[in-house]
Image 1: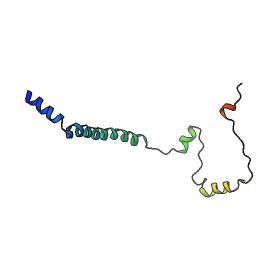
Image 2: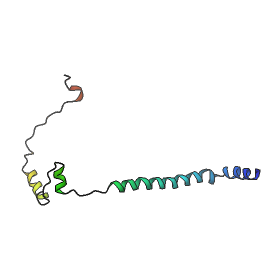
Image 3: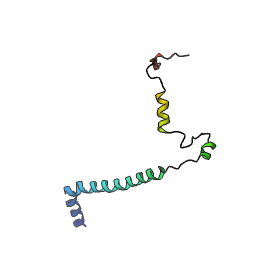
Image 4: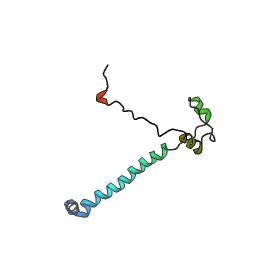
Length: 99
């Protein structure tokens, strides 16, 4: 029995056991922990497309795919008058009136 205790004491003083075993446990344990988190990430990131009927059921009006294009949105932005504008200062939290 003392032989086993002597061997344990001998190996517990070695740097490779003192620092190596906890490092390997951390690397292997971290690998399994990350596996669980990444599994959750990919499990819940699966997005489904919503049909127009489903969107209408929730009160969302979807436009047809060809109705909105990059060119049509660019034309809308070009029609805006960006040269004539007025700077308006928003209220600060300490300037708000308390009713």
